[in-house]
Each structure stands twice: as C-alpha cells, then as structure tokens.
Image (tube, rainbow over the protein chains, first blue to last red):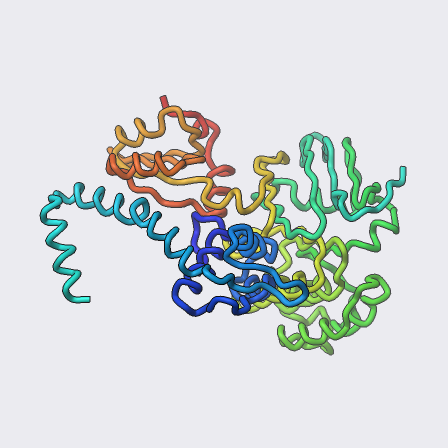
Length: 120
Length: 303
C-alpha cells in the first residue's frame, strides 16, 4: 500500500485520484475523513490531511462545512487530462530507455505494441 | 521565569543542552524544538543520548549546561510541567506487590485526562491479566502495562522510550493502531524512541536522529522520505555519477560499487538509468543506519 521513496501525502493524493478515475469515488460523493485514511493506511493523520488538502487546493475535492470532503464535478475529466500529460514522462521515456538498453529497435517496439494492442 | 502557555509555542524547546557524566559527554550541545500535537521520533543507536534527553525533559535529571523549556518552563521539580507529562520507559518499576489493576486504579491521581474506559479496552486488546502480580508478568505483559498507561493517560506530552520490549509483532501493531486512533481523536504531543524504525516510520511527523550525543537529522518525516537513493553499478560509472554529489555512504566489491546520495532530482535519475546504474530508494531505517554506522572516511566525497 504505502511504498518507500515517495512522500506519503503524495501517495494518498494519488490513491484518491485513482479512485476517482476508476469510478470508485463518484463526483459529488463524500470521501473518507482524514482520520479514516490515517487509520486505514496506518499513517500520521497530519500526513493524510496534507494529501487531502492538496486535492482541495487543486479543486478536485471540496469541503462542505461540518460535513466533510466531496469530489468536485468535472474532477474525473480533469484528472484524466493531467494523467495523459504525465504518461509520456512516466511511461514512454522509461520504456524507450529500457528498449534501447535491450537492443530493441523502434520498429520492433512498434510491432510489439501493435501485437499487445490487438489482444486486450 | 514563568512563560505563558499558548498553543502555538513549541511544547519542548532545548538550546545548547549538554550533559556530562564524569568525563563522558552523553549529550553534546543539542538544540531542537517540538511542535504541539505532533508525533515525533527520537531515534539513534544505543548510547546516542536519547534516554538522557528524555530524562532531562521529564525532570528526572539535570543538564550540565543549556536551556530546557517544556511548556515554556524549566521541567525540574515543576509540578505545573510534570503533571502534563507521561514518560513510559523500558525499565519501569512498580511496588513489589502491585498488580496491573493497581497501576490503572492509581493512574487517575497522576493524570487528569485519564480515560478508564480506554484503559479497560486496551487491557482486553492486549489480553493483560490485571490480577496477577506484576513481578510474575512476562516481559511483554509488563511492556503492555506501560503502553496502556501511556495511551490512556492522554497526557499533553507523552514520552515512549522503547516501550515494547517483549511485545510480539501483533501486539506492536495494536499499539501503533491504538496510538493513531486515539491521537486522531485527542491530539497531543508524542515523543517516541525506538529501534524499530521501519515499523514506526509512517506514524511520525517529525524525526530527530542522535549520534554520539549530537543531532545529525532534525527534519520533517515527509521530507526525509525518498531523500536518499542508493546507486549501484560498475565502479567507474558510480564514481562518475557520484562526483560532486553529497555521498552519505559508499561500498564496493570488486568492480562494483554502490553509493548512497541525497537529493536526486528527476533529471539525475534519468541520467543514472541511462548510464546503466540501478537506483533504489533508501528507507528511513537504512538512512539512519548509513548515517550513524559508517566510518568517518565514508562520509567524504570520493575523489
């Protein structure tokens, strides 16, 4: 669940983002409280709060006073757009690095991707 | 000498604290502060000075030099300060004929926030026999008594000094879970000293690491996470990569070498991967081992 090497609050924010993108947290639905996140992931509540607040700052979540945190309308589409932008940096560049290390040419790589693509 | 107690002030502030025992310097010119309502790790090897500092902060020992403030006041023989503190230590002693229930029954006299219901729940959780003489308890059960007192006391400032000798992995997880739960509902300041750093790393908000009586790390836990990376590869590639970087540990076997460096940005990571180096993140525990274990020469940059 929680991995080394990345700040925990970033991982909490990403976990919530994944749940929104995957549809497990629907727009205008309530998200678990900071203390619930802390207990579930066994992390410091201040750290969990930092992850949640980051998404509030980005407008992905919003606060309803006295009730809790909710997923904003349009959050899913905005997250998808941001993730597409990051796809190149996080997946494509390392893929090309590894391929070149293994001596896989761009043509072979294209073939491999097409082959994977026809059998989803 | 008295300062007003306000919520925004540091709960603990220590300046230039030194403690000598004869010719041995246990704590050497240490300065730090602890913010209210945070869980802090006080970490380091045996003999680093952790327990000495906690004893001074809880008024059980006196500094040789330096200024120590707890809730803005000097802690020694100061009931205003000491009534707000609970100190759970590894070698807690109790009167010979005491049973755990006697400890829990007398606790409300010392701790005004004592929660008897919480204590009763924890007794169940830890399966502690409350009517057995403390002398007859196992090492783990004795530790459970201390952990229960430390949690149920809800003292505004709680010290746990290696609180769980003899507790098994299940009981330790129980302690972490109950600490987090109760802290979330009743925020307070916790200072936790332990050797089981990997187990508690995620609970901590702030980390202080001592080595030979001095502070070598005083940092937010989140900022420490992922701050160090071990880079492994051929000696020449590793040396080239480490050039000009802050190296905190270094090992080599034959033609292979590994260095632990701090503050790698994404570009450096990519550069390392492209030159065939393997990168792995260093856990808080590994970071501390490397910072406190290595001979001085290994802290120097390779040249």
